[in-house]
Image (cartoon, rainbow, N blue to C red; front, side, top):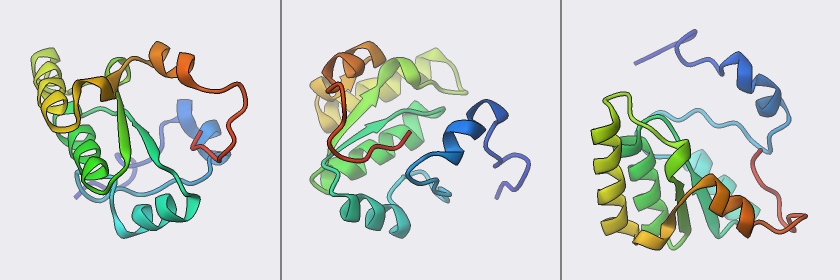
Length: 125
C-alpha cells in the first residue's frame, strides 16, 4: 500500500483540490468506495466524467462500475493514459468500448462542447 508522499495531491492540482466539491481517497481500482457511492447518490449525479493515469485498470473499472450502477460514465480518452505505455492505454479503451459503449468514450474537447455555460448541479472541479 502506498503512503505519503506517493499519495499526496500534486502541487499543480492542490489549488483545484482545495476548492473541489469533494476529495476522496481511493483505496482500490474503482472510484466506487462506500464514501463515493454516498457522495454520488446524495449529489444526485447521473453522469460521471472519468479520467486518470491507469486507463486499463482504475479508469476502466470505475467506468464499468458506474455503468452497472445505472450511471452514464464518460471516459475522457485524451485525459487518460497508462504508465505501461500507449498500447496498454489503447487496449483499455478498446475494452471500455465493449463494456460501456463506444459513445461513452470522448475527448476533452467533446466534453467542453457538451457542457452548458453554467452547470445547474454541483460538479467536481
